[in-house]
Length: 309
Image (spheres, rainbow, N blue to C red):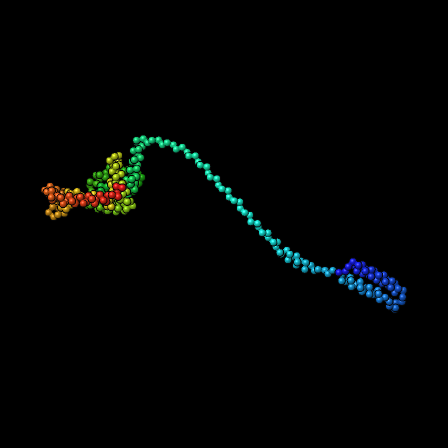
């Protein structure tokens, strides 16, 4: 680097050189053309010295391509992302305990009348008696089979125009006029219906416990006896303990199938013969059947214990 004094000295040399050149050029103009201008050596050194300084002092031009590349690189650099400061979540405020609701005053129920009590009892008995749950039964009587067949046939022919009283009016006389073969057909249908009803009832009973069926039978009996309401008959549940035999029933059971006493044509005559034999038995002979009755009674009491709890 040039100091301020050096720059000033060079400037003076350049200026001095220019003055010498101008003066020598004027001299050369006055001299003849063939004579070469004589330039002092000091002037030439100053001129060369000045050119060297001029060339060294000029700044080099930077190319546009270089500047554009630098600019692109600077633009390509993404600004450094600032780290997010972790913000702490405010602590949850404890929920206030809900204020205790005031209990609404319970309205006093009106006492039931006697009629309402009876209706409520009947509804409960019908529910316990399984009246709605019991499966429908097919007719097991020849008259019921015949009448149901005729009504069904009339409904298929007349449809909604069927007048049931008119149809039923002539059924009784038609039923009495049936032939023996037609009656046999009706009896055969009844036998099939009995088997179907027994199977359906047994499958239905399996859905309930023996205790529930026992309570259903008691409810049906109470509806008939206390409230005079006709219901379906009680269930004959084979799972329910069979009734115990008394001494006379034990004797009948032992003698019913004995040859010479049993009359295959009449059960009534057989029972009359057994009854006369029972009357002729002495106290010692009856004692064996009384023991049988006592044993069977103990069996029944033991089997009924679950139903009495």
